[in-house]
Image (cartoon, protein in one colour):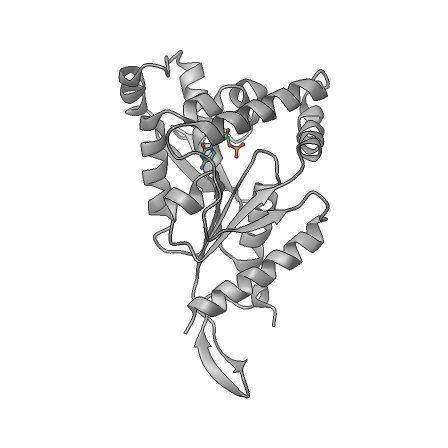
Length: 253
Ligand code: DC
């Protein structure tokens, strides 16, 4: 049975043991957490497309806030300065009319490309460790999951944002492979970037994300580990779709 071809809330007869049972397929929440450059967003987008779910890149919110702080010279080591600045930060996800994929808007401006620049990558882990920043982002993320049918990737989605999500995935991959993947991505935009710079940035971000005081990156107890060091995208999707089908079946009635 291929659930990807069946709409959520589809009512059908499914083989259960020796007989068939009528089941309403419920929408679920899928969380994908893990280290930087493991391919979380690629998988999340594929799943959202197959299932007709909404994809939310929670890291984009931390990146957009970081961009705002850099542009407006906000000192993010000062709680007071952060609290005041955040009053003027308005974040939205707006679907791209061509791709259907949600893009990040900061105060009504599309910043989807700007937030991927190295200048933001270098500072985002520091900003994402600030309590006021996390409170704002997490509150908005929780609201987005209210109607289910969502795939959200990040660092604390299965542990803090949606601790009751029906399917939690924790992604990992060898550091050398992650560096290569990120380098290829960044090199397209900037031919001066070096492998060493990318490696240092990834290692530093992983360290800060996993060791910060508030909501550090860690695997939720009930998350399934997905190590994709040696998996191609098709095999990975096939494997995860099986987990999705199992989770949907387990939560449908
Ligand atoms: O997934 P990403 O690389 O775009 O995330 C950017 C940064 O934001 C990353 O260094 C960690 C932080 N982040 C976080 O702290 N919590 C999340 N849920 C998502 C991202």
